[in-house]
Length: 316
Image (cartoon, rainbow, N blue to C red; front, side, top):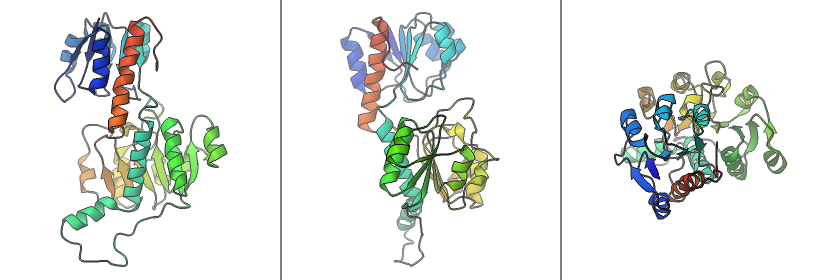
């Protein structure tokens, strides 16, 4: 059986597939594969391991006549037409759990970097403009007793809440259902979206991207944030209307933002580059050796399970 992987991933998963006797081919260029090349490479394959950068729509799915499983090397799967794949009896899988800690850690890194103005401080030193301690130099914000708003209290949101609570933050959250763990162990409060926005000193986004969450934060509700608030997005860029966010950062209507994802990724709006009160990262939420190896292994195991006639480990 043939398996096509749309980019080089950690070898642990590839080696496992080869050990099981599968014929594996990998797109070798370190950039998203063009659609035509993807179709040509995958059209006779029994399985595909894909990245978020590959849009697997009806056209692509129709060309993959032999495909039985699409294993997405990510937690999110908004790049795949899951319903259409299902109608073609193609199983779609993702890699949940294994990147929870890495993404939660990065989220808190952004919170700390924004609250203590780390990026601005480092630039000041590197520019040679640091001339000594000053009583009002780059004043930031302490986390203790601040309201930490979580949008989306799933696996990652829960881990972020645990970390924030350890800093002395008061947890509030917005989600479709109650998170009993957060309420019982962290004394968290479930509130409406607008209530979380109004109350949060730090707002951290951990929602999936779908038709309901696209531009969930927009010109109507983003202005509800406090002028002292920090917005963190390590989920999906399209959840935030970036034009509104940029305008608010420019006019200092919020204190800062920390972004690891973008609306038009990999393209980033040029206005962000001129702003001192935003930290921009290159989508590295799961970028640890531990997480990426586990993602590779889980994607491979999902492929092996389905092609062996068994149930997928993490179907979506």
